[in-house]
Length: 211
Figure 1 (cartoon, rainbow, N blue to C red):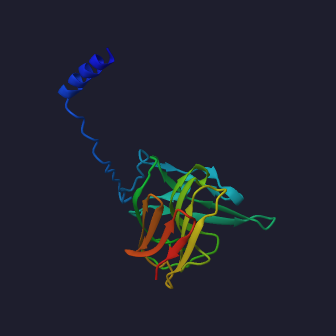
Figure 2 (tube, rainbow, N blue to C red):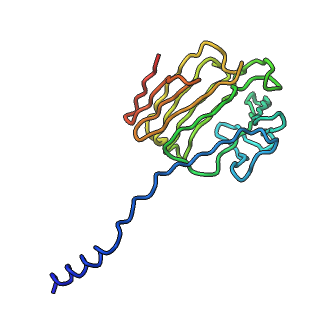
Figure 3 (cartoon, rainbow, N blue to C red):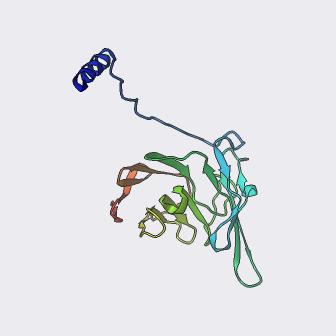
């Protein structure tokens, strides 16, 4: 009986065409922030209290100069502490392995995209991929107190050590726009600055700096 059922099943399956594998995913997204209005179908404007006393507020996000501007103000409290109010936006969709690229100028006191300005301590310019608890976090960061350093950081959970490299560009990154890119694949993150590979993060919590 079992043999008859197997033969019948084979005849049925033999008449069916094999199902082709699904096509590979090829998601692509780009925003040049040049419309004068932020597309809230794609972006969330942060409005929350950050750790260490800083806050993010929607009024610190500007689109009135033909690009995205994230502002920062700092007020010294009577007790000597600093209240920082800044801007941040986040893409609404979760993203995974792939290529991420940003063109930005690190923060300074400049009031227009082409104007000269000065960097200042307390500011951080960052482009990153983040999931809750830093179970995935891949960062480009430039601190205002060290404006020539590019920090490339890879997290795999807040309780685990992170991979961090600091690459000295020797030219202040707030003086002009630069292209920052990383390529994220299984077990590896490759960091690029203006088209040059500058660091590689690996799955064993080590990072290689490329000269």
